[in-house]
Image 1 (spheres, helix red, strand yellow):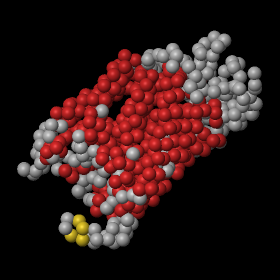
Image 2: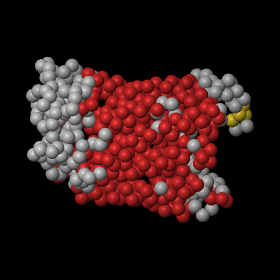
Image 3: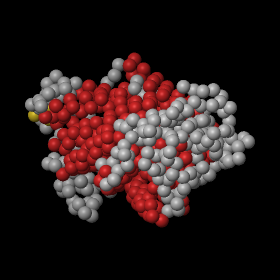
Image 4: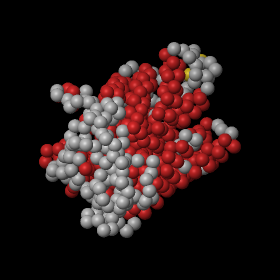
Length: 594
């Protein structure tokens, strides 16, 4: 059996801090990555509620255009189609819903919460490389959330140009659009700080024996995600600053000459390029899709071996496929702009590269299926959500292949087919991955298990109602129902679609109500849940080889030494069906990896 040289450990890793002695230093301005992870978790769950409430208002309008909301009265003037709300208000609702869900819910829970809590323990580090920077990254994100919510209450209302905020519309909208820009600039700074911290921690602070190809796939996914953040966010920040200057300083980066607004020439117009905004935004926006999905892929790759009691199928292929996704993700942004006017040769290039990027995603999917094949599968709540992630991601990915084809995309681009696709990728994908991670790491975070029965009920209701809400959107899109339209009943060719929209809206109400089960289970289990113990799932990775919740500096005594990969399950000749990474003995690795 090969041995691993164990370097002599210094008294503390660089950046490790003393244990806090006051309530504020322990729970508010904490330097402990585990507390910061929990702060991000509560932050993301709160914003998830806000984003979900906005979605219910959008769906109400689509189900019953013209029927006043009980608490709003008839806002639209008499005789105007769609009397529930003004069209500008509806535009604000779907704009803010998408913005909050993407930037303030999915990213914080997958990267800020799970990444902060899990990564240092999984690689055997005492804490993040820069604890103070880590604390700052969270407290920079807080005012960003305050600003985005406050934009609802300013004159003219919140931003209403869609989450993409295409120019020139976004350059001439009321004050709420300015707050939208400021909020995302602040949040972008927070994300950049987090990315720098993750990369430094993973590269420099791994435990003895923890080579890159012994890292858990969750850490691999977050490492690649941090790289994407570091490379893509500055481009978005530059675009946000230029658009902010157009709105406040009279510049014309995105305002074209001869712009007419409400029948009058726009005073600041002159020489800008509206397509420049689209190129800058989507150069960030497509990697952003993988910034949201890669952590969920890592979580799923973590959970499937544990509950199938098998090694992950094709560990190296899984790691390399994530690298491939990251690289290809930067060269496909133009497929979002097929309808904006594009040289056919360039459009063909983007079409082919978009189809190619499906290959590494397919590798991951088949490797997940290979992991399940012949396994001793335990259908615990984390496993149910992880399996749902795989299934929903496949549906979202297959519908995405349609849009990679330029002629097909031209037909369906502005329809509800796109809305169905993105929700299968981001709700069916990212959020089911987040639910899987929440149920999986909850015992490590809080020391107790969530109620399994109520967890399965929550999964079942969420799974069924999610598909009832979003799968019919594909049919609506093929019927030609346009997105971003607040009253489709005025179009003759869309008559007869209201019944389906009403069914989808009622399903959404049930979907939202079912999340109350998760909320109650989450908080009641903190006091009433069964005591978890250090390793309730019999898992191999390092976070399960310490107490639940982990102590200050994560490990009592010396940092553990890593002897093998993270997924050695059902090893022949070994007494138990799991073999922790830090346990001496067992099968030796075929060769050492740098």
